[in-house]
Image (cartoon, rainbow, N blue to C red; front, side, top):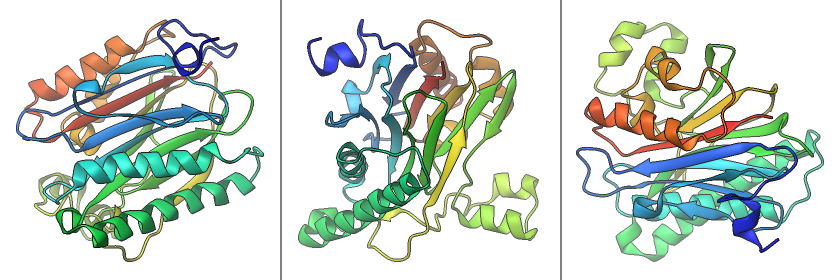
Length: 282
C-alpha cells in the first residue's frame, strides 16, 4: 500500500467496499465557493475538498468519516470557516480510537465545540475573518464496518438515507423556520416561501454564542445510500427529485450520481454553492 491515495480510492479497495464520492460546485450566481467537504479515516489527516479541487471518489475506511461544511453566505471568510471546521473536527476524530459505544457521542460533541471556539478565536485575531462561520454535517463510522455511525450536525446542511426507494431526512434543520414548523406557527407551504427561511439558530463560529449540536448514533443496512449535502442542493431539489436521481440498486461508482445531482441543481438555477457527498453502505 502506498499511503493515503491507495487507501481512499483511485483504485484502492478495503474488504468492506464502502464506496464514497463527493463534489462541490460554485453554482450559478455566487462569485466564490464557500462550501467544502472532507473525508478521512484512522490516524490519517483529513482531506478537505473545495473549489476546483472539489471532486473525489474512493472507498471509506472504518473507522472513518465524511462531512460537508457550508461557509456563512456573505460573511467574510466563509470559505476559510468551512475548510477550518472540517480540518479541526477531522483532527480531533483522527486522534481518538472510537469504542463503538455511547462514549463516541461525547467525542463528536467535543470536536464540534472545539471547532466552534477555534473559529471564533481565529476571527477575533483577524479583522478580515470577522463573523466567519459555517454549518456542518458529518457521519463518523466508529466500528469495524459501515453499519454504525455517529451523526453530528450544526445548522442546515443535511444528511439523508436512501433505502429501498424511500428517502429519509436524518437531520433536523437548525433554523428559525424549522422551529416555527415544529411549533405549528407556520405551514409547510408558507415555510417554503418565507424570506427568513435561511436564518440559522446555530452555526460553528459566527462570533461564538450558544451552540446545541445534534449528536446521536445511527444504524444502517447493506445497500443504504447516504447523502450529505449543503442547502444549495436541498434548497433547489425537492425530495422527489432527489429520489429520481439516486441509484436504484448498488453501484460500482457513485461519482456519476454526484454529477447528476449537481447538474440538476444548476439546471434549477443554483442560487447558492452546492456540495454533495454520497456513501454506499456495504
